[in-house]
Image (tube, rainbow, N blue to C red; front, side):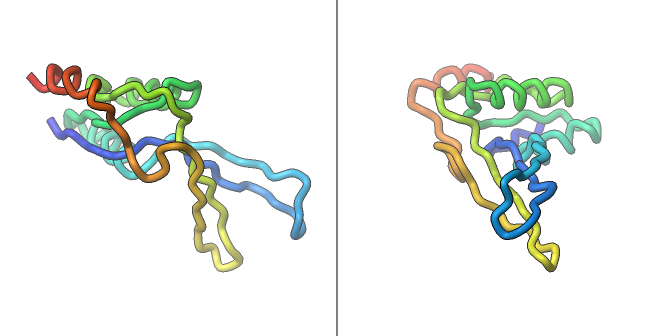
Length: 125
């Protein structure tokens, strides 16, 4: 089994923006992050994979967990965390180059509290 470590988040892609100061912006939200996508990709290739990370107990965190389960990625190394799911807001500039802004308590870091370690270690056996 491959154990992938890293953050989980939702990417919010700006789908439309009109003018310099738009009154309305449309987004398309996709479950992701590089570690998340690696674990899903391994599973789709028929390789047993799990993700080791903190995951929010909020609505979006539950959706991320559900996607992992549906994709066949083991969720036994996920540590529930009472913090908002990190959001990555992505827009393309005039040349098509993506620019990211991150929102949330985790940002780039996935955080475990000391209390999570016994449960994680027990799953390794």
